[in-house]
Length: 296
Image (cartoon, rainbow, N blue to C red; front, side, top):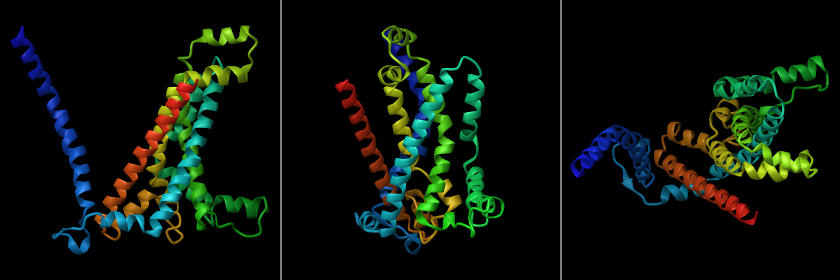
């Protein structure tokens, strides 16, 4: 029996070995390599000779004014798009869950933007809001509400607003599917008991629905926060950081430093600062949700 148990453990280990090896090679090693690079002077001028400079790359990132702008832009993008996606997704899920027919049809319609290419929809939004784009044509030539074209993408908050609208529009469908699955798992007996006690729709929503899907709300919050800090394609395609790096986010600025200026040490340090920020925000979110659960 002991020999068979040992043989089973060996077989399980051999089956897991390819996956563990792939994870180590393609995940663990790049992370450790990136951490190592963040402590070196690694740029185009020192491609073959890397000198250890300690935390100088981190100091450069934290003292960089453009990084401050990019970090604030990323934070604002996350603070706007995450609640927007969650609120609209939850509202759509509640409405679809309340109708007996065409649930699948509406779910497919709402989910179509999610599976649409970021590059394609970003180019469409850039075309719509461009100075010579479709929206300005409608406002000036068709509706005649404006005498001159509005430069939507040529200001910091104008460009970011367009990217945030795109982020919310594209993410509602994902939240809809997640929240709809959670709503369908809420016991109907709770709603029937509440109806007998005379509770209305709003009371049922706030005292039954929301407490029942708290774990799903936390999951969506954490995932969307990570997604908000990982915004890249929409900013890159719509504004490309213009004007004068005023619409940069942390990933576009990291890309710029790594592949435009060749400052890989700076980019590596920036990536770990963002990772630590995400871990900190996730811990805060978990603690806030746990405190709310304990209070209730």
